[in-house]
Length: 128
Image (cartoon, rainbow, N blue to C red):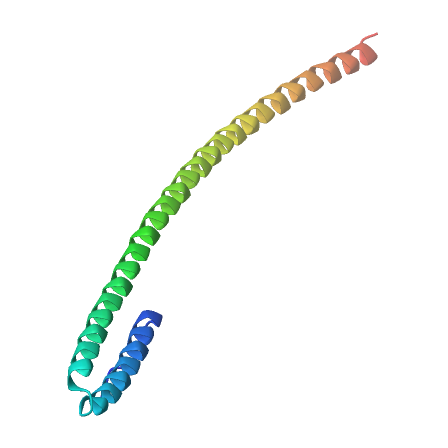
């Protein structure tokens, strides 16, 4: 039982091989009438098939290499952006802590100042 093709490349190669097989069958049937010409045609077809197979393989390998380079570059960019985002988040976190501390200090000092003013107002009211 033949293995089913799993990629577009394998399907294309299988289809080409099937077509070449059909062509070879037809050429062999003509072989009886024209033996010399048929042998030359068969050898040319086989050479063309080997060349086409090599071209498909090299094209697939080149495409895979180019995709790997593109993928590595993309991942590098994503990593850099992630680092930048992480640094920005740390900066925002530190700033929010400072703002919270400053707010507490300002609130505490205004409370004290308000208490002092209230005490002065009441003392001025009662001790006049």
